[in-house]
Length: 146
Image (cartoon, rainbow, N blue to C red):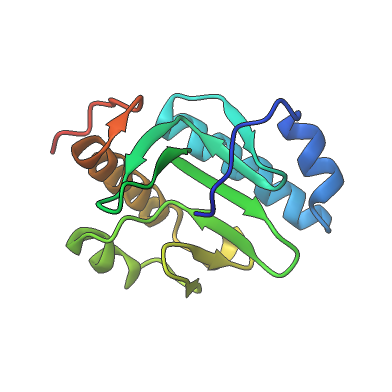
């Protein structure tokens, strides 16, 4: 995810103004519910277009460090950008059952929620939280210890 910081912009107002169709708005509000249920965190805006849940601190071997949301998404014009992926064997395996999507470096692109398997989406989110808990200073200490 690009370097961004948390802002005070109202998430619901952002979705109403930014989502370019009624279906995109409906799916955005459904994603809010799903990601909030999984993280137990309120949605916050990160930068101008990313809705994030929770926060973790990362530090790369290069010395670069910063904060980012644990999970997030953006209802972009072409497709949703889902920031829910960690590069683990389990996550790679789950992708085969996700449904219709495209993959970026660490971002999953989905046109609409009906195109994907929501239980698999939730499993991907939980796997990412586990990964972040193990590898970063994370305020997302959830009980996903299976």
